[in-house]
Amino acid sequence: MKLDDKLYLVRFNTDKLNHIKIANGELCLKCKDKVCTFICPAHVYDWDEEENRISVGYEGCLECGTCRVACPSGNIKWDYPRGGFGVSWKNG
Amino acid sequence: MENFDVIVVGGGPAGLSAAISAAKAGMKTAVIERGDYPGTKNVMGGVLYTQATNEVAPDFWKEAPLERPVIEQRYAFLSKDEILTAGYRDPAWGQAPNYNAHTVLRVKFDRWLADQAIKAGAMIITETLVEDLLYHGDDVVGVRTGRSEGDLGAKVVIIAEGANNFLACKAGLAKPLRPENMAVVVKEIIELPPEKIEDRFCLEPHEGATIELFGDSTAGMMGTSFIYTNKNSISVGVGAMVNSMSEKGWSPNDLLEHLKAKPYVKRLLQGGETKEYLAHLIPEGGYNTIPKLYRQGVMVVGDTAMFVNGLNREGSNLAMISGKIAGNVAAEAIKSGDISAQGMSVYETRLRDSFVIKDLYKFRKLMPFIEANPHLLGEYPEILNQAARMYFTADGTPKAKVFSNIMDMAFKKRTKSGLVKDMFNAWRALK
Image (cartoon, rainbow over all chains, first blue to last red):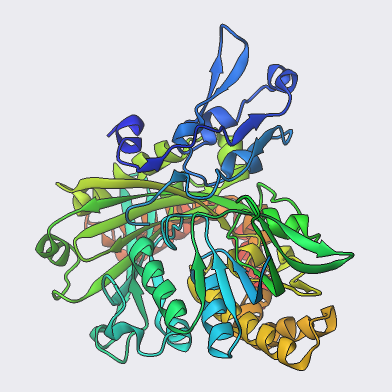
């Protein structure tokens, strides 16, 4: 089963406000491993070759917080979505 | 501004236990939860311990939404397609009141526990995110929520915000999380008919089992995998330290698929339908990473306080007991009129007298030991499996030769002095 199909099973109440920000895009340019692009369980982060930046699909965030801990330069400003928004587990 | 005696931030097992004990002691108590209702933001592997839960909600098993009582706990050591297992089973664990633990699904269970808090007199405020504590000078006097005019007053605030310790950091109690102290865990809920689960795990209809897997199940990284039986589903998950995952370049979902593809695991899950995919952080830093647990008018409980005993995969019980103690201390401090740091310090004293900090202290050297010796989860499962295969193989080799071959194999993989050193260091780490 592909990750996209698994994520399709997750229930979200998507906020129109983005709760994830890359603080400084310059740091991403210099970042060698780009840990966020593989360690996020929901693959929220992707390296955009054309725009030379990390693209953030905050709508699919599972709210674990791994990206914030894993980013070697502490460059991901990740907060919880506003109350009532974001992931809403069915089983937990 | 509405005022409470006690405000609890977060509706998980720690926060709800705190609210229950504070409300039962007559405190005007509120739980502030960012989800639709307590449970919808909460994830764990799935084991709930009876003794701790019973202290918070007596005779909970009579009405709480539980999955299955755990009658068997199995350990498995994986090396490629090979597996060595050991388990303990006691059917008596399947009968009230002898339960030791149950599997649960947190969305259902936490909602039920929140109902117990409401019955005790607490108010649950949902869909509300606490953004910061409210101060009057240096004194904490409540919380600031994301709602307009959302300030709420409190004599004591109990921080039960979970692994992501935003508020504990803002309050100067905790430090930002480090990748070497946190495990990222993903799990799937896989639906299967109950009779299939019972056949595959050799269970009676009301019984449950757990398997923890080590070694190749986390590709040798520091972490564990688990398979737990629910009523009509199986929870299967894998967790490893964030720093190991970063260094090795693993994606959590790939690691889960790696586990699910193991022949032994595959057969247990076969034909099931995945119903949900979940992710969570687990604080695994242990005793050395426990934050400051209190200040004037504030206490920190559960995952936020790093109360997880990874070795025994205990967490929900540490959370509930720390919550219960904090709720009681809050009530006593408010009644006696001393909510100073001194008044709150009783919380830490009682935790140190309980298994919560005693167990974490006991294993304080274990995490650094395993981290400094990554071969333990790489080479040893391999050595164990090879030794088992040689022992069980009937190929005409005289048994005396088999035993010396096993020793040769072990010494080849890990030198004699290395083996002795590992044993000595393991003993010292647990001493």
